[in-house]
Length: 624
Image (cartoon, rainbow, N blue to C red; front, top):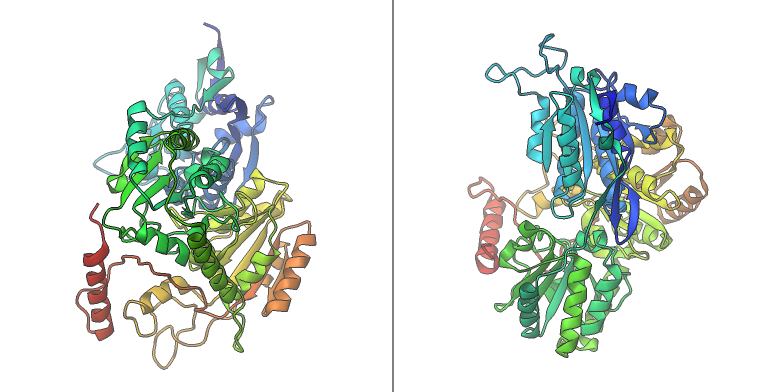
């Protein structure tokens, strides 16, 4: 057997550089590069290999916060439909632990990302080392054990030869549509530098085939039998529609049988907003049209979604006593949720074979075109109303979004994740281009927005990428804004400065709180001792300018329009600080979300909220 002597870190990099995936006959280089921050634990291992290996094509990006680099890598893979990824490397201790939140975000969203945190010495000679967590009852536990709870595959490479099986297992999970998520390979810093005679064949080009999974014949028969008995089906399209590249198939399926389509946050952007069967987002943050249809539907066709509490309105959205759920999903765990009839299949293949079978049976829904047209037009009028609100006090948030939405083109990608914006965007945003809507709402991780926008820009450099976020998210994490400047890759950051965490503030008020508590960016009052004095005034544009970016402040409609036009002309990253009226986000439409309301309280309004929530749940909520 021919061998080559390399350090563990060098061998890992050489292996990653030779990995490809094949999907529908097209090959993609799977690992595009390494994104990281160096410290003891990875500098002299992974760092040495990246610096000195001359035949390595992996590009290195310097991050500025470890959580931020994982968010950027996640967004990159999401925008690439999981066919290309980045590896993320960190030092030991706090550097590694900073990546845990990013790992959870990737895993919850079923997005592949490879994490390579440095670890303590495997030989334990210098223990305890700087940044080491010591557990007297088990010396093998390190900070990296925290990744076990948020990784789909986890391993610690304690000997150089262990890399071979660990790396192959990592690729197995990363390229599996049903099981993908964060993969963690913990790398002790001494082992990274240890050499071993690796088999040359380990580094040969390896193509991982992502095969479309067809449904079984028996499952198909059951699904067709179920659909044929139903008159008012509703499609809920999830992220799996994008990853399967089933956008055209979804549209053709809906048109063939006159079935309205609603979307999860991950699925939105799979159909243009003005398509007559596009009813918009569904559930807690859904549209009036989609939620009315969901209540009356006798069949929910869930395509590539894990049916979390928002699209199902905490399992209260589907109120027809005869409703059934048909789930098309490659993942058994997701496909069997809510007692669904599961068609275990790739989204595109599943829809195609169902379409063929239903055409043979002459199936068509009982919706009239006029009925669906009326629902859609009713909702379009409501969006227009919210997009054109006026106030003497300032700029309403929904009006600002209307201006931005009107400005957007089919080639612009908008990224968001947390706060009040996901609700506004899921309800109101009109997608003009396919995959122009990039929402991380599986984990709804504050701080994803700016980093994620940089990841989107890396994935599609020819497009304009926009982060839509509030002041709270920006203050929490915007590290990779600097990376975008460093890499000369322009991103656009639009901050809607609404005075704090208004989404949660609104949630408090709607469940008994008189004024909201602890969620707005206010000074502490000398009189009351509480955070209820004036709003803190922050110059976000000034922060961006100090980093070397272009920046604008907008306080009214005209200033916002002008800032957007000027930003498009810029060649470097831009921040637009939009001052909007607090509490002017959109509300819910015939939907609900279960939260834990206090059963006992000194507040009568809280007691009332508890009773109302309890009664609603008893009346409408499913138990499974």
